[in-house]
Amino acid sequence: MNSKPLKVGIICFWDRHATPYLEKYERVLEEMNIEYVVLFWQRTNIDRKVVKVNEKTIDIYSPNKSGILGKITSFFRWRKIMISCLNLEKYDRIIVLSTYPAVLLSSYLRKEFTNKYIFDIRDYSMESFYFFKKLVMRIIRDSSFTTISSEGYLKWLDPSEKIILNHNLTFSSNTISKQTFFEKKVLNFAFVGNVRLDNQTRALLLSLKNSLRYRMSFIGRILPSSDIKVLCDREKVRNISFGEAFTTEEKPSIYSDIDLINAVYANKATNIGLGDSTPIPNRLYDAIIFKCPIVASEGTYLAELINEYKIGFSLNGFDPNAECYFDHYIQNFNKQVFLSGCEKLLSKVMYEEGIFQDKLKNTLMNWKGEFV
Image (cartoon, rainbow, N blue to C red; front, side, top):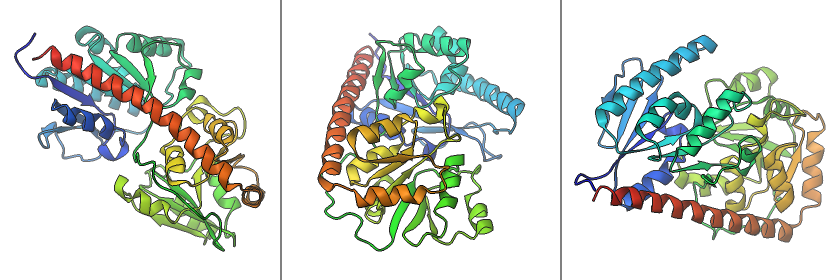
């Protein structure tokens, strides 16, 4: 055993705002009194160097360039800086959040941290390429354990006993109840989260343009790639509003004014790619916690869950008659069936979340025991 305390490094490929699931790891590490440092990729501040911001975070500056060649250059520059930082800080164990940083650091992880890191898979990357998928599966094999944020990812990952679910719960209260549904004259159809504009989202927005029955809200940080405000100005969309970035604590207030959750995201109508069809957004958990019906794109794993538990409906966002689907759902809405579905799915999620929490705590306890 070692006489020094355990020191854990958490590797993030974005800033804190784009990494809400980080809080789950931080909370447990702090509960267990384990020293940790979070390493973010700071992509926008050109004056930022590799500097210590406070006792628990380090911002690594490396500009994120556009274009394929630019991105490849940015990634490998980040890799060089990250490895230098890891060597300098000398962490005992690592938690890697997302696939790309794990792949970029794969040889380093294999050399320095075999069975000494947690791998957290957030989305589909390039697993359709044989060698990329093979590398991802090797990273899973050499991890202490690996988490996935959606069971839909098992459509493109090979089976492994190392894989467990890690749900994107950002607000865990299950005591919230809602008594009335769809009683307002104008209903709020809201997107809550980092705002992007996939092709189906764009088409649905224009389909509901200036509806007298539905207003649209987009609440959260608008991603640089999204031209949603330009689109709304150009198309003279008047039944729309925007809200700023929010904290987890503000969610109950936000959802108290929402009637339907917008979880439509896909770039195609059929044969939707794995990157769009297999994730689960935070909005699913918001739906079952805050008791708001949710709308998703047909042909996605999210739509499968929504239809199975009867907690909303799915549609083709390109359908010019999309408003009819909203009307039909509301006219046939069954409150008891909806609330029952919310509770059933929430119970399943909380059970699986308990398994993840136990696995994380036991792994950290074993790590910590080696350094007592």
